[in-house]
Image (cartoon, rainbow, N blue to C red; front, side):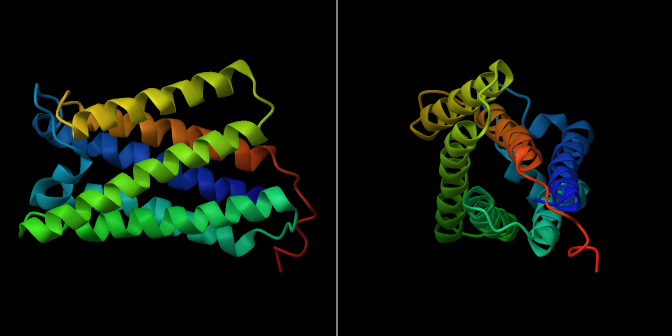
Length: 196
């Protein structure tokens, strides 16, 4: 894993947090209420759609750039690149399906399925990354947050709770931190090859 790849991965995850924060500041009512909605509410309103697009689009772009400069060939790095590719596709599909999900029931169901797949992927990838890491107390806390977020999202889907935004923030945030920690913990080969 090159330092440049780790930087790109970090930039993408920071962008997600910053621009999602901008969305909340611009219109907190979408998600900070008793029956809160999800992140996608920001993508269908003109006031917040640009910041929302950046919050999901930049992680896709930076993850793609990271994939282009990863030069290591060890098994763990190969697995992480597979995860990054899948992450790019799932986030991109989430973003694109956001713009149209309010048009009809079929598109809404499709968006829901893509979002569920993203959450399941993030949880599975987080479990794998925890195994790869040195398993410090910090990693255990991040994995715990991830699993709590997944449980809350599952309960929300089945109607027992209404904390979709909170569960999305927990799962995405824990995944982001584990992703950055995992990528930065992998061996860093000579970057002469990636800089040419």
